[in-house]
Image 1: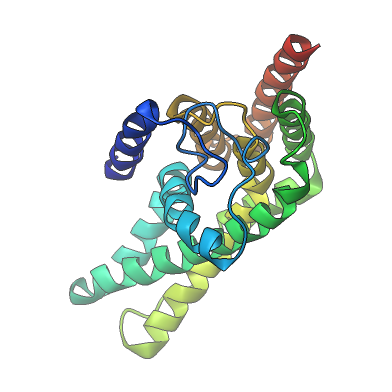
Image 2: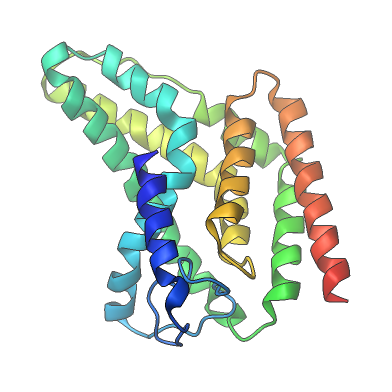
Length: 231
């Protein structure tokens, strides 16, 4: 909740700004998207947007991973619970950070394309992905557990491995949806909330097959509406 509050505050503060080509927080600026923003080039640009990407990733993905973080906590001695959760979340967000860097590089050729056409295509791709065996494998990986020694270096290493298993499953499961999110014509908190609900539901539902179908249907309907509006 705190992460969402921080993100929303930054977005509201950006309402009075005029979007510029060199902005490093294009997903926080009203009316901007990865496809619409040229962005500054080089290492300096990457470093400048990484904090906002981490904030966005945390806001969208952590709600679904709370049960896994709780598993890491309850399987550690009380005095080590905070460090265990920190290692788990650090590993989890580190992999999302790597995905953000890869996604930024992948989206570079699309920045000159019209966002109102690129977004529905990306969303349709995410919808189709929901029905693939790869998505099923990824969701199953998200639910994998591993023995966690309650203390010592083995305990920390096991928590890190548990974080890697969850993070790799989540990136594989939600990566296409996050890519579509980055291509949204208006990257507003409301759009983020919609993707967060869909991704969390897909992971936490007790009927994963039905959940994937429902999420795919929602993505397909929204993509169709955007495509019709763009024609």
